[in-house]
Amino acid sequence: MKPRAESEKERLNLSDILVRLAFAGQKLEHDTKDTHQLNPVERLVSIKNVWDACKAELGNVETAIDVGSGFGYGTVFLETEGIKTIGIENVGKKIKQGVELFHKAGVDVKVIDSLDFQKSPAFIEADFNSVEGKAAADLITVFYVGPAIVDKEGAFEKFKSLLKENGKILVATNAGKAETEKWLEAHPIPFSHKIIEVPDNFEKTAIILEQQK
Image (cartoon, rainbow, N blue to C red; front, side, top):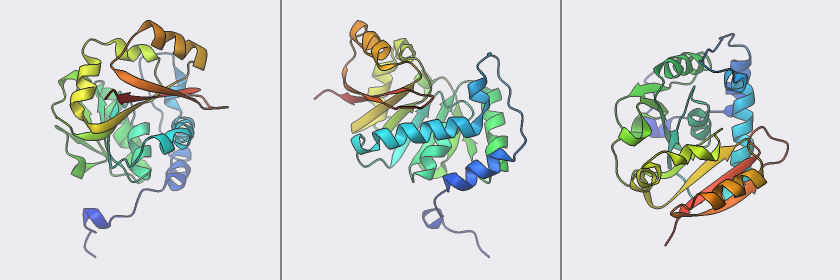
């Protein structure tokens, strides 16, 4: 039987992936004491809860760039929503482990050199600011971070260059709403924002950023 054309492939099924991951038996490793990153099922469920709380505000999303994609949880989750997604991660060890992990779960995730959504789901090993592209994506996601990630010099200019005209940014953090609001007040940014709480979830707060008209 011939492989299906890309447009005819069935959407990845999150429930199936979660079951396979639960029995994958792969031990993940990284260089911090943060054990939450090492629990694929917990991370995917948390990301799904964030998405369910925010998706009505995000409009029609066809392409996404997942910044700081780590082991690939956000990248693969967005693919289960039918969104062509490329993860950007600068730690090669995480990418290698993520590829192995999701291959065991039946997900054909790849490593590529440049933004090409026809090859999604895929990872690029690079610093986010070095990724080339212009008006490429409908959405940029940054899951499981403190808001301070956007302190990085040039981050917002890079976000703007990679987003399509009406593109948005979704940031999810385990900080509470009050802490998130305090940070945003202290760091003026060239985007309007909306804060959405995600009750009873590991990532407690989501921030949707939209370019100011």
